[in-house]
Length: 292
Image (tube, rainbow, N blue to C red; front, top):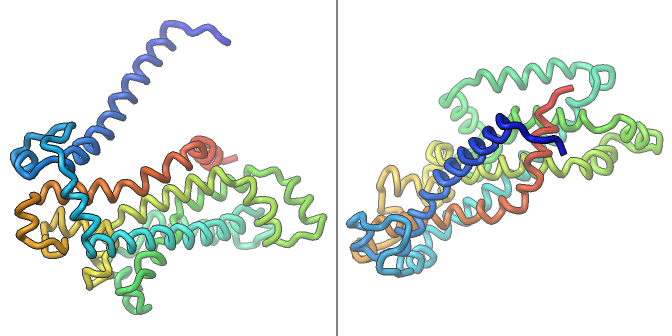
């Protein structure tokens, strides 16, 4: 192992210290929200809670999980995330496989690639996008949240570069054995592409789980809102009519504890998924982001 000099050791100390502080800045707000959700109304309203619950109570969680509107929004949020991730990954994988080929195999590849990059840099804006979604009768349906953002060009570029890093000999062997494009993609490319598929799937899942603006634009009925849009109406717009909780119960529990419990519950799905995909992160991003 090479001997570390003083400069390298100083950089390591600074790097670990900086990342530790950055990690705390991400974790502390979540701990504060969790502590508020488990505190009494008086402590939460008085701003006495920091990182530890005061007058411990689970009343806010009992009310949250017993709330039909919250459960419905949670189900729609999960449905949107799963459906959106599957659709997006299928479309991106098929497009990346085609665009990773040489021009002699796929004539016109450059035209398609530049067209996609152009849409990444320039787009029509909210009004033209809304008109397209409206004219295709997607409004007030889950597809309005899934189809317009199905192709993320940045993720597509990462997938193309990953496919190009796969040795050409593997594809040539499959072709010699009589495999077509679909068989080559399924039996050769996909089995060795777990890192980039897992990484891009996590990116797409987080995007769908946190997106709230498209729900406000394309959905007119509050009972169709996914969880992110549902929470936005409560937290930012402070429209407590959508909580499904009576004013008497809100007066007993405090708005802060109810909102904190709903925010914490909304973060749990991503927190549960991330550890299973984290091991693919570095390999998937590094290989996919390096262009030969």
